[in-house]
Length: 66
Image (cartoon, rainbow, N blue to C red):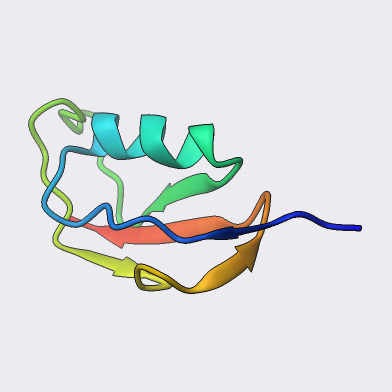
């Protein structure tokens, strides 16, 4: 059986912190239009899909915009 987890809120935090949060839950972060030289420590996420609280299967991706 596939484990399900609730999507965390990653809006308003850095990409680096968000990657840590989603990895701990068994999810992946997918960054829209990611630049090669993106500063993940100082770049803040402004939008995410799916939104916080949605239940998804472990291993799913959270798509984010900065």
